[in-house]
Length: 194
Image 1 (tube, rainbow, N blue to C red):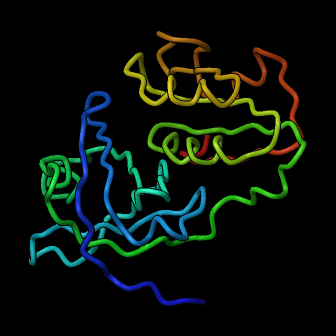
Image 2: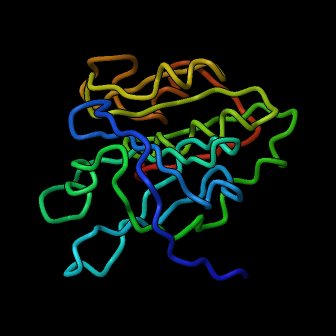
């Protein structure tokens, strides 16, 4: 397997999508080979923090050489809080793409459930773009503080579950399947165990 080197990527843009959820586009060589379901290891610019933060790839723009990551700020001094303060032009050390990604070819012509819960939702966007299949996109959130659902609607039928019942089905993505009596051939998922 090819060894991935650390590169210094450039932040192209950053925005807040929801409470504690940020979207960052970065200019990176990793965009050339990134596949749906892979992730990047992002490092802070703080030399005292040696360990990277693994963050899923949300979207790819191969033509412009960019990747989009959507992440949750998990608290002060975790690295993600430092990422959230970055803006266009800032530099960020990255390694990637890492991981195997989703088996996109296995889904051709099938009815596929794309299931994402919380911060497991972002990797569903590039997957939805690339799948040549009938897509049912099941998204799980804690509350009505939604993100990426509008982006995903462009690529398939979107269903939403919230733990508190404020939007869509009360519960998690598995409850959507029961409530809607959905049937599929294949499941591609990212997120917490339901």
